[in-house]
Each structure stands twice: as structure tokens, then as C-alpha cells.
Length: 134
Image 1 (spheres, helix red, strand yellow):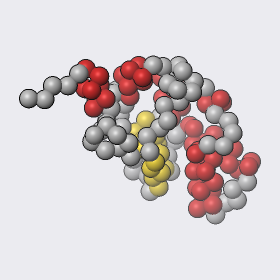
Image 2 (image 1 turned 90 degrees about the horizontal axis):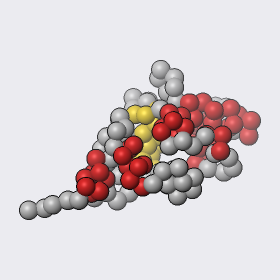
Image 3 (image 1 turned 45 degrees about the vertical axis):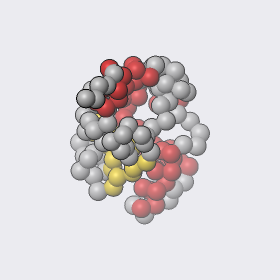
Image 4 (image 1 turned 90 degrees about the vertical axis):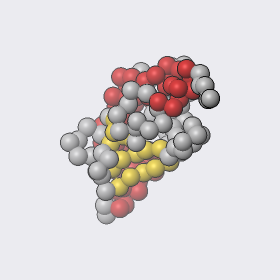
């Protein structure tokens, strides 16, 4: 008989309830490893269990700004410098036949951070396996 701790149950409740930010029906998905836990390690607005409690209530697709600013209390204006979002923006711009200039990337980042369109053009998610490892 396998018994699990409440922490293990909390971790498992976060594994399959969320796919990513944006639109699960979008033609372009960006998948990577699990997020780095900026709310825990870098910005320190949440402890690990608090973050998991929030994550356990996610839906399949979530609004990026709502998660980071409202739930994790991290202003998106603090996300500066090189990051994965800039590479995603550059890829999408070039894919759509537009120049990936700094100005265009910055403009596109504003749209990526919103993900509030009725039908966002992409989805950003993380790969997970059933063991809880990423």
C-alpha cells in the first residue's frame, strides 16, 4: 500500500491541470522545461508550497499577466534583459515575415505578456512527466 504525504499530493495536483499560457488551439506551441520558479527563487514573492497551491488551481490555459502579476505578485515590467520571451518573439516575427528588430520584439513582447486576445496566436507551455520531474 502506497501512502503519500500532503506535499506529494500537492505536487501531483499540479502535473496535469495546466498546459500553458495562451491558446491550446493555437497553431504554434512553444514547449520547454518547467518554469524556473521566479516567484520562489528570484523574486521571492512566494514560498514553494504557496506556489504549488496556486498552480494546483490552474486551468489548461492561463492568462500570463493574471498569473504573474495577480497571483504571483510580480510586475511584468521587471522582466527585462535577455530572456526566453525575446527569443519567442523574434521567432514569431520572422515566421510571420516581419523583421525581428529590437523595437518589433519589444512591441511583440507586450502582446505576448497580455495573452488576453480572444484567440491568442500561440501557446507557451512546459513539458512534464508523471514522476514530478521536468
